[in-house]
Amino acid sequence: MRPICFAMTDTPTPFPLPTHNPELISFLETRRSNLAKSMAAPGPDAGTRDKILEIAARVPDHRKLAPWRFVVFEGDARSSFGQHISTAFIAANPTAPADRAIFEGARLTRAPLVVAVISSPVDCPRGTPKWEQELSAGAVCFNMCLAAQSHGFGAQWLTEWYAFDDSVNAALKLSEGQRVAGYIYIGTATAGSLPRTRPVLENVTEYYGKS
Ligand SMILES: Cc1cc2nc3c(=O)[nH]c(=O)nc-3n(C[C@H](O)[C@H](O)[C@H](O)COP(=O)(O)O)c2cc1C
Image (cartoon, rainbow, N blue to C red; front, side, top):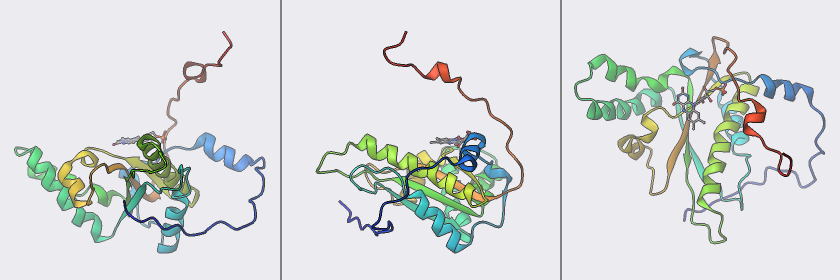
């Protein structure tokens, strides 16, 4: 099991009790992802990027296992990693036109900052199920989107095909049991997102004990 170090970022005094926060409610009620293909520079500066990552890591995590890790792609690292993506694409699609392989290799360059969130569940001696640890990785992905958007950047959680490709994942040094939970694309949004239909509450909700 890999060693996990925790930094004490919380103050030793309790946080304030929750208060009604209309601005936050409005943000959550109207939140939409921003398309990666509509993102542009600039991305967050180094300090803001780290703040976004720190906030992303502040998620429910049963028994403080930190069962996830980040791989950050900025600058040339995006296209250099893209070579693994285009190689994997060509291997799976040997007859595809060359420009398609170039397109695939450029996927990460759509945004100035891309973060791969790797679900890294551990064999917890105290019994936290792997499922809970994987859920925590999903929470990290969404929290990262919220953190980026609340700093004024667009964000989108994508997996596309390359999150599931063994050779691309080997380049991320995924070990047994590790999976890509998402590639989080972050950058300046250049186009607003249209409203998206949402589930009707009564279709996804039941009130136990009431008919
Ligand atoms: C695990 C996961 C993987 C996703 N992968 C993709 C993807 O590969 N391509 C895509 O168009 N949307 C993908 N989405 C959906 C978008 O992130 C986003 O949720 C969707 O566009 C709806 O936008 P909203 O966040 O505004 O509701 C994925 C979502 C999740 C939770």
